[in-house]
Structures are given as structure tokens and as C-alpha cells.
Image (cartoon, rainbow, N blue to C red; front, side, top):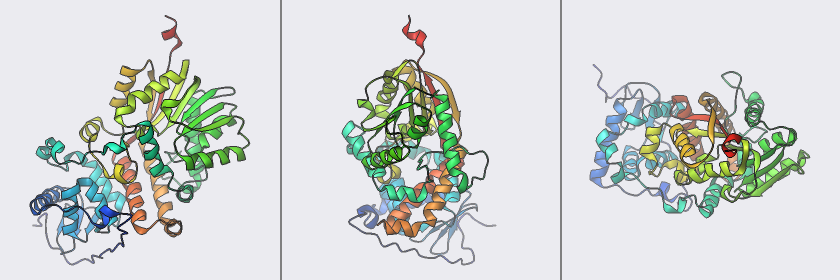
Length: 428
């Protein structure tokens, strides 16, 4: 009978070597050391978790764990366990960036891990999370100054980088497809379908005054202005603002669209519609009330706010909201995904808005991310030509695959919300 840990016939175990630049990636090049005891405990906990999963975890000494399934190859077990022991899941991601482990099908391996996220850590350790989990640094709080810095670290990387893997609309949010599997040639149309649906729900038409919170590279503003609306769009990214303005001017719509470098909390005026696509993820739980109060304050009575939001399970949000994650450290500083329950509670307790509609379509995001990830991989040489090293490319491959797996497993979802501000509430 085969045990959970065994020595199968030898399989090639290629050792990955990533040249890590220590000044650029200090914690990847030289991870904090875990004590011998902590490393041993970590190895035992990790192996206990892995042997119960439908994975095939292959170690460089020829041993393997798991019940079979997608492969995960650990090239340097000591470093792998040591990083997790000292940095938790941050260390797991940094170990991948350093080339200490890999997977032939990264999305498949992540999908298994995401589907079992709540059970990976034993219940007693879950209850002691406050003692061992890393805490978010105060520097990443999304105060007006902190939000500017956090946004810049991701969205000001390079417009050329994003253009390499996004479609011609430069839309960096979930598309809406007619059928699966999705096709790259249809991605632009799927993005327009998503944008047009949001604008329809917001009832944007000729003469509508629209506030957009989170410009991106301007495609939604262009589509709204093409309907005859007048759009004020807010962003904290200088790079995005510059290119969005260029694209709006090229479309001949500069007289209908104003793109402002402005925090949502600094917005003024009132509007018939407010639209915000996948921006709430950068707000932070501390400021969710301020975000929804802004929607309320900027809407005229009878107005409509449409928000597209990535969500996670409420129990996992509560368990991890005070934990410093790999995504926060390397991809979205200060970011946190809300839950459907958290959105409902915040709107109920802090605004006069009503949730009139909520539609979920996470499977579409999984396909969107797959197309982005495949495009990013295909254009790896172009990414390198822009000056992004191998560690960065592994980091972004990890991010895109990790996100795709979250949606494929159902751990993540994406919602389109309609919030209304009834005139009757102001006539009493």
C-alpha cells in the first residue's frame, strides 16, 4: 500500500536558479532566518497539510507527498520550509520568486490550495494567528497620502508593461464573455460588453453627469462620453492619468471628460451617476465607510452608483484582514478584498443608499486572468526589454496565476452592484 510520503521511481527534478538582485529584492535574496525549532515545526505542519491534498508534491531528495493531482516541485526544501517558517505565506511567495519551488501547471496547483485555504493551517494555529501572523505595516494605511503611494507602486510601474498583456482597450478588470473558453481576439469586445453593462445599469445617457472613481486608462470614460455623458474621472496614478488623457483626446472627447489627480475623499459636486470599477479593493477596511459615504454624498437624490468589486468569503476576510500578505507586500500595498456581507453592513450602517441589484460572475474573471497570464508569458522577452528582471517576471506570473486560481476555485468572486439613492428619502 502506498503511503502519503514515499519514494517513487525517480523523476527529473530540474533545479531552478534565479539570479536575484539583492538591492531590488532584499527579502527574496536573503530571507529572514527561522529558528531551528520553528523551521522543524513548519516543515511538520506544511507536510501534514500537503499530504492530505489532491496534489503531487515532489521534493529534490526523491520523496513526495499528496494524494495525486497537479505537481508542485520543491527544489530546495530547507529554504522552502525556512521561508514559510519565518514569513508564512509571504515566504511561500518569496520562495517561488527565488526559484526554490515551481509547478508545471501553476494555476492547477494554486486552485487546489485555494479550494482548501480554510483547512491548510490546523485549527489550534488558526486561533493563535495573532501571535504568529505578520501584521500590515502602518505605512500602508490608505490615508490620502498613503493611498497615493500605494497606488503608485502598482499602477505607475509602466504603461508599456500593462500594454503588453492587456487588450487594446487597456481595461484592467474582469471582462464579460458570451461563452467559454474565451478567446484573445474577443477580449476587447468582452471588455466593452462589461463596460456597457455597467453604464446601462447606471442609466448613463445623453447629458448624464458621471463621476468615475478610478480612471484606469480611460476606456469607461470614453464609452460614457460617447453616449453623450459628461464625465469627471478621478485617479491617483500619474502614469494612468497621462495616457488616459491622450486616449480621450484621440477620441475627440476632451470636452466631455475631465481626468483629475484626486483622492475619492476629495471629490466635490453632485452627479447623476457614480461608477467605480475594482477600486474598492485598494481602499482598505478602515476606510470602507468613507468610500461608501463618498458615493452617497456625490449622488443626487434618485441617483445610481454602480460598483464592480472583487470579493472573498466573509469568514476568510475576518480571519485575514489584519494579516500582511504576499499580495500586499509585492502587488497591491494596502489592498484588501471585502466580502459581500461587509459591503452590505457598511452601506447599511454608514449611508442612505440601498443595494438594488448584485450580480456575480467570477468565472468570467478566471478566463480574463488566463488570457492576461498567457499573454504575459508569451511576451516575457518584451517585459525583460522594458527592464523588468526575472524575479519580477516570476512575481507577476505568481500573482496572475494565484488570482486566476482564486476565481476558478470559487474562493474569489466578482460582483456588480447597483446602489440607489431614493428621492422619497429626501421628501420626508
